[in-house]
Picture (cartoon, rainbow, N blue to C red):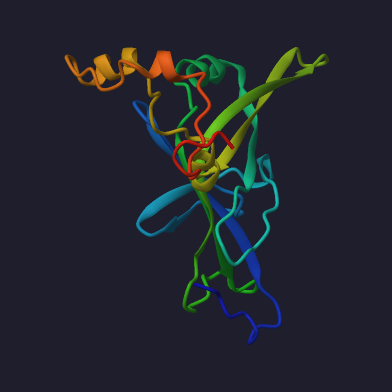
Length: 196
């Protein structure tokens, strides 16, 4: 659903990221200047420490990828992140539009709007060391793949050989001759008795 913003001279927008790490927790954070509740869920303010790459708006679903970064992670939280592997976690990025003077959510259809829905395909961590204070902070970047991207890489079916046939259907001999005829040349569609 599209959001009609043509009646507004100025708007403020914010991103809301919902990351569901199985077996750990559902992390909810926003780049809005304050914590905010959307759809009954409280999103924690991380402000400018949250970065999300741009996306392209298209009519049909495509294989877009998205990078979501969170900086300023303290050193004592690194082990917790690495122990609870976020790979394969579902991620939902929503964009909401606000009145800039009052900070209230605009009461228009489709607000907030889903910006991206997918899964974390990989993640990386980088460290920033401050020599003067002898402290480090970390940035985690989530590489996210859309559902379309995951489906396009999926292979389905099975091999047609007697070994796989026995694995799926023990006792079935219908694929028993496949190794014998695998290198034969068949002229499908040719009249009987011809070789071309």
